[in-house]
Image (spheres, helix red, strand yellow):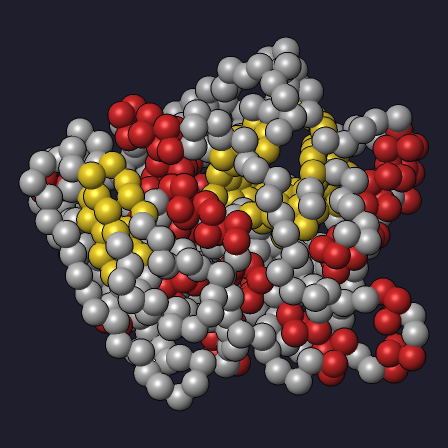
Length: 541
C-alpha cells in the first residue's frame, strides 16, 4: 500500500515498559503521558488512541499538542475506547455509575459549553463510567460537543476513507438479551444496566460484510489472552488467573465479532493493562482501495445505515427477553443490504452521507467561573438535588426522521406532555418495489405492550396507548402516519414473524444469568488493547 497511517496510543499506565515499534523517540513518548505509536497503512492519516478519557480532555489535548510541537506532526483524529465521561453538569454526575468520591466534573463541560473547542476530531464509544442519560439520547450516535462525536450503542462511520466501527458498553449475560428499557431517572440497577451490551447491536454488526479498518470496544474480546503472552499478563494482573483458566475473562459477543468482522485493528480498554497478541484467521484480509485526496470529513456508513433501517422492527424497549432472527425459520434473518436497499437509504440522505454539524446544547452546563468562585466549597454533584428527567435529543430526532427508524428514548417517553418530539405532523415514507407484500413496511403507533411495564407519566397516571396499523394493497404504496392524539409515538417497522432464534449461538441455548467479567464488577479497569491484521493475522497490543 502506498499510504501510511501513524497510530499513536496514549496509555494511562505509568509502567512505561511496553513499547511497540516506536515512531517517536522513547524520551518524547514518556514525557507525553506515555504516548506510544506504530505505523499502520491507510491514506496518510495520523490517529491517536486513548484507552479511557475519564473526562480529562484538557490533559489529553495538551499531550497531543505537546507531541505535535515536539515532533513536527499534525494529528488528524483522536479515538477513545470508552469511559469518556461526557458530564455536562452535576445532574449528569448523578447518572454515572461510580463511587461518590469519583464523581468529579473534570473538563468535558468546557467543550460542551463552547468555552473550549476540541483541537482534533474526536470519536468515542461508551464504557461503564458514563453520563448514561446524555449518551442514551444519542442512541444512533451524534455530537456531544463541537468536534466530538459519540458512535451510539453501536455504529460505523467513515473518515477520509478509513472505516471505523464500534460497540459501546460492557457485556453482562443477564442483560444481553433485554431491550433498551432504561431511562433516567435511574435506579442503582438501571444506572448500570443502561451501559450493558445488547444482542440487537451485536446482531446488526454481524450483518456487516464490507471490511472494517478499525473496530472499538470497551471490554476485551474473550479469549484474546490465548494469542499473546499470558505469563506477562498474569504477572501484572495475577487476579485474572481464574478467569483466564476458565476462559471467562472478557466479552463473548466481542469475541464473536472479532472472528466475524476481522477488522484491520481492534482497540479495547477497560482492563488496566497493556497486552499484545496475534490472532490468526483462515482467510486473507484484503486492503481496501481508498482516495487519499478524499476530504477529511466524518460520514455515515451506507451499509450500516441500511442495516439499521432494515432491522428497526427488532428494536425493543421492554425489559423482557428479545430474541434475534435465526436460521430455520420462514422469516428473513440475514439483513446484509442488497444494492437496491442501499440505494433506497442513500436517496433518503439525498446522496450525501456527510454527518451534519448540528450539535446544540440542551442543558445548562457547569460553569468554570462558578468553580473558581465561592461555589468551590460545594461539589458539583451536590448542586443538583436529583437526577434529570429523560429527554429527546434533536440530533437523534432528525436522524430518525430521515432514516425512518425509531428513537428508543422517544418510545420510552410519555408524549402526553411537552417534549421535543413533534407528533402532530404527518410523516410519510415510500415503500420500495423490492419489498413484497409479505415484507411490506408498516407504521404503527406505539402501544403499552412495547414499553416497560413500569412506564408512567411524569405525574402519577399510567399511560394507555392504542395500537393501530395500516394494511397495504401493493408493495409500492405510500405509507403515511397521521397522529390524531398527542399521546401517540411513531413506530416504524417491517412486518416480519416474531423472531425465535438468538444470534448469541446457533442452538439458541439459554444465556447464563451471571456476569462473566472479573469479580470487580463495573470497576474502572481500563487499558488499551489493540488488534492488527497482516493479511491473515491479527495483532493485539
